[in-house]
Image (cartoon, rainbow, N blue to C red; front, side):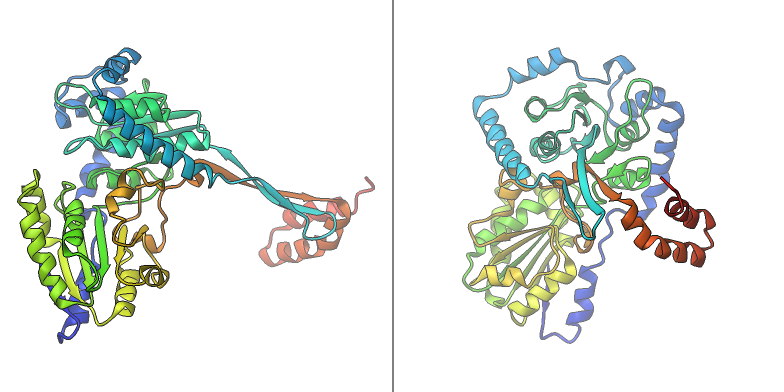
Length: 432
């Protein structure tokens, strides 16, 4: 764990290192690009090859897709309490999403002119559900569940299989409840390529959403343009603002919740006005981590990705948080709501000591698919609006066009686009 104190001579210099966190290592791009190109040119044959190479399963195009019978059998293996948890989370996410569904509108700003917008749900969306280190059941809800609320008709889920070729029953249950219409046991870069380019067995999608490891993130960035994507998101991260009113055990538990994710590149950052609290949190982390099942993963993050920062005051904490633009920002201090208003960029803000980040991961309502690596400065988290196409509506009557035809003509003249200007003047001069 690294400690920084605002009174230190090199505080700002050392702090700047905190902000330098790429979404993925650039050296992986060549290998990712090669896999994408292979799938694009060879289709199903490449998928078969990479399924065996990376996920150690032998598939055929006929077995890419999870059958309805497999889903039915999986549903029987999920216990009642797990089903209840999925249903509660899905209901909360669905209710939140429906509050944000965009409505068409129109307005007449000038006589004879109507402008507005309309929104149509996308036809076919792909959701990537990570597997590997943990079956991310909640990610199904926070991607496919929102797409379903938006009215997307075809929701394609891609997730890596286990070594037995199967997908975790709880993941399949969540997909079933969330409205997924097609499920494919394909992982990583080749799964992203299948959705982006399509193959003989799998039709391409309009948009790909969902988190993933560094390779998945790089793949999504590279296929952007072939399809839409939600964002370029890297390893998970949490920042916590706290003063001496906060329980150090709460802070330690929340920092460890991000450290256990799996890549070893996660970050957990504490900003505190109380140097004593920093020492207490450090001891609480070392004590609590001994009770966790993923200690090797946690140790990697504790060594390189945990920062304890003593700040001058809460104003400085809000400034640092705004510059860092964390994926998750917890504010646990007196008047936490006031401090939250001073933060300009964060994927999601969790206010007060009774709002652990994990509540957002699983069941609060907003999607847990959030921008990382400082991209919250220009990206927002996944929401229901992201599954809609927005179309501008423009309607002019002849009299209104007559008033603005000269403006059209002047722009056409400035830009050397004669036909543009004529498209307005020919109407004005028409006897119709």
